[in-house]
Image 1 (cartoon, one colour):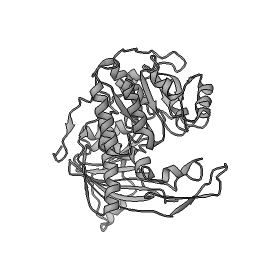
Image 2 (tube, helix red, strand yellow):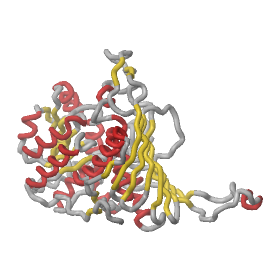
Image 3 (cartoon, rainbow, N blue to C red):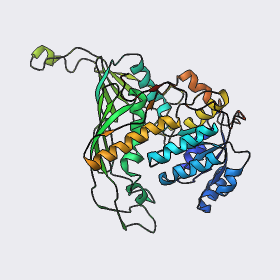
Image 4 (cartoon, rainbow, N blue to C red):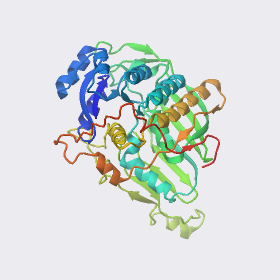
Length: 424
């Protein structure tokens, strides 16, 4: 299916480059409210540069890839739906629950698909962890910790101020990776409790450019500590912070009745999964047990680098992580062609958004926030299924499936949903 991009900022290059790895999609056009940004992307990747209105009206474009700023996501996605296009959006789906619900209802009324990042949940890292949990190796998850902690992005990003305002911050900017990963693994969240703080009240531009050295005001929490309660009765702590210099905390670690599991960084597609190996509990007051501390294997490592969407490939020239952005877009296009529900669906993203907004609400009010939006099960993506999405050769033309299914209700979310308040 042919794709047109609206929003030609930093992330657009990655989508265009990795988009060439997939069957089912071909990115052919781009647009931006800043013409120079669209011209740059079009020239670099031989795309058709268009204004937004013309791109929305183009008969040969079937999917809009919405890469605008978060505050514009809902408006642009709703315009795409009004124009009769499917839409796949960068995260978050919207910055308000009301806008997100309206977007999905409008799409479903027209039989159109809404998809949303993060698609890292389809990568080999999280899918390997999901398979181990679903197959019962961890048992019933009791508790865990998820954490994303950095010193922000003002030292490298040319326009960091927008990330420090209402509708952004670490919870809505980086939280989607972690909340989506947790709900993909554990099911829906029913309640959140959180505390937040802003530190400092002003930050300074650090990247080279006309604003370097200038300060800007911070309008949202820079650190949030939350507890997420799941319908399964698991309680998981979540920390999102742009106030941390260095740390040794793993991205996600979950603890069940049979084992513990370490999940790799959900902001990447690969990474090794670790499952606790030895169930023998040692007595630290017994000399014989203490002698065994350095001899037993604590973790079994499940490597994912050899899987379809686990291989290290980014950044170009010095790859250190797996990056397959456009995977969710390609899987959605494949689902449209095959007449089945897609995985990174609007309904799945809507629940994650409700959780993140609930975290912020709880941090502001000091009271628990109930999550009233039902969750959606994420169907596993096996490596065999993943192989069908990837082109056999990045140099070969994409095998497009011009489905002609615009207006068909085939991909409206039909998966079984966890009902909030029910136990898994």
